Length: 108
Ligand SMILES: [Zn+2]
Image (cartoon, rainbow, N blue to C red):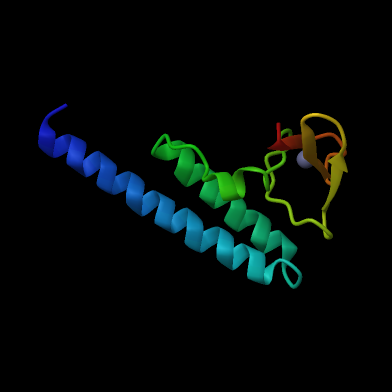
């Protein structure tokens, strides 16, 4: 890849992250009023991340169901539990498919 192409690629990724950030922040705001639309925003954000081959920013990664890939909102269609132990974990359960969960390690 030439230097110019590489520069374009990083620029694309930067714009993609920016768009993901905007979409998901907006989804968070409208979630309680229009959950279906918010889920669609989440889907769109995930598609953008896949298209430019980037990982979802860590802030948002744990908000997606592992199984049905839907964007979740704790208190509406997800519940969050803290699992004690070493390391302790924060686990998000999806209420749409009743299966997906994702653990976030908080301390080691
Ligand atoms: Zn799910």
